[in-house]
Length: 228
Image 1 (tube, one colour):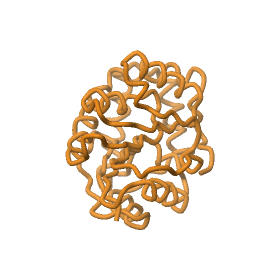
Image 2 (image 1 turned 45 degrees about the vertical axis):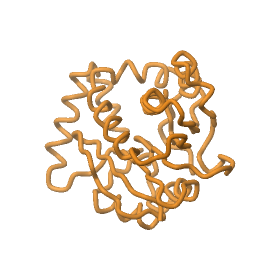
Image 3 (image 1 turned 60 degrees about the horizontal axis):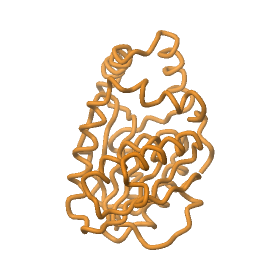
Image 4 (image 1 turned 180 degrees about the vertical axis):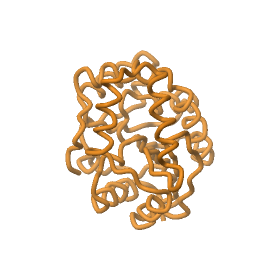
């Protein structure tokens, strides 16, 4: 996996949660439904959290499933440090293996029962690289193990209007005009927005079956799929 064009280090990492706090209801909905996708996981499930960031989805799942064991994969040293601290404060740190690096460098051990990948694959600009990323997840899952993936996406027919709504929501969340201009520039140069059909094809090619888009919150879409 190539290093994404946008790095989440320094101030970009330390202010991440604060900058998107007013958009938290969108995240809450994703976490709620992801947990339901994982409803059939065993009581002592092993869950892979790819691009764990500051630990939001990990903490949500760990609180609700006290027997689950997690592996948090995050290349940003700053974000991984924040994730470690939050897990320690929540009393779940002993149930988390922290891997500060990329997924392909994670040693393969026991297979995982489920995996999450939130807002990361859209930074992979080439389809082949994105497909390889999902294959790395698939080969670490038990057969039938579910993946929940969420990304910024292209909404055919409605994209322009939804993009305007998305940027208005970011303004509401406190982003300045300068920050919005930087964000729009980053979307054009460093993010690949694929359609629902394209995402489903990528997941199938990577070794998953029954990909289903189960959520759309403005520009963010989420899919579930099971490893073949």
